[in-house]
Image (cartoon, rainbow, N blue to C red; front, side, top):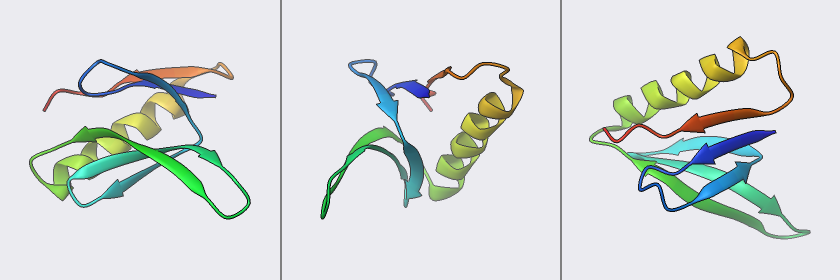
Length: 76
């Protein structure tokens, strides 16, 4: 289980998948039969920075010994 506090610190979300879309990092929060619901977790100055943040999330998951991981999206 992955809990992420969004960049604007207004939401805490349990996300199922995290993806980079240009300068944005999106989190999939639910799926239906034909639909997928996602929210923006953060926006960065470049797609390269967004990929760096995605790697930070991955490292946090890798380092955890728990079934539940929390991560706060960086401001920049």
